[in-house]
Image (cartoon, rainbow, N blue to C red; front, side, top):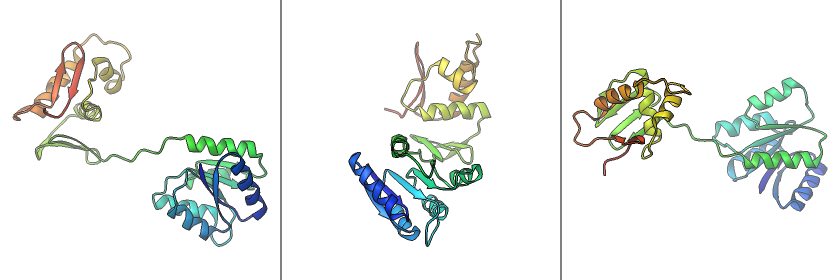
Length: 225
């Protein structure tokens, strides 16, 4: 694992470098805030370990800057400031974890490893598209072949679920749980009724259907063969 440590205490930095090396990791070290910022935005790291109180540029300023620049690397804040307000401030600035000095290396390493195991954050999706069917999630609008489709809120939810699962069969039970939040069978044709209306709006007037009934299984929205 490649780690960036931004820490002005030379003895602490040397100790962590040695201990991390023994644990099989590599570490780059910046002794001031400006150097740390340049490395954080210019090099890829699995984890950034960031002291709060630094010369030239403090840790929170670094954190806010790299987050605004789109750097999503997990950040562990190290600080002697252990108050609740200090922790909240650090986390709200974009930190992922907080460790108060003095600390045991075993806990430090466990927290670094935990941050490295986190899956990368998903990019925000603003639109979905299958063939010529497009859904704008920000404007809450749908069109096919450039023509607007007016949907009721539940129909929009239903189509969004189908589009997010495009090419996969979704069952009636899945739709009841995800769209209507029913964790039981209401013994009605609510799914079939809404699906029929949705198919009429999405597929009517087009040569190729996108929404298909999979007999005995459910429904599938997929691109034409």
